Length: 82
Image 1 (cartoon, rainbow, N blue to C red):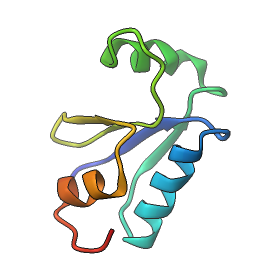
Image 2 (image 1 turned 180 degrees about the horizontal axis):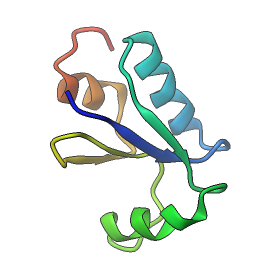
Image 3 (image 1 turned 90 degrees about the vertical axis):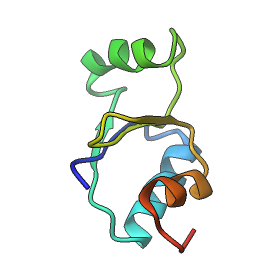
Image 4 (image 1 turned 180 degrees about the vertical axis):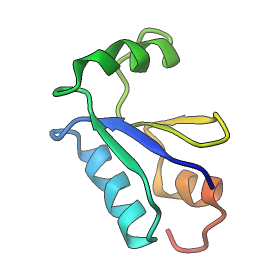
């Protein structure tokens, strides 16, 4: 699969969980901390109807998952291990 980009913050527990999921399943992704790279806040707001939802994860096929569960990520990536 093409590049995966996760927009999030260091204080977000769901971001930490999603990072652990990707790392446990050896899924490559790019991490964007929107508290440090504030130019991406507007992007997150735009794709989430004005809401600052993190993590917002964008997949290479253009699909987006906001605050996905491990099950949602496993289903999207066709993985058995959640």
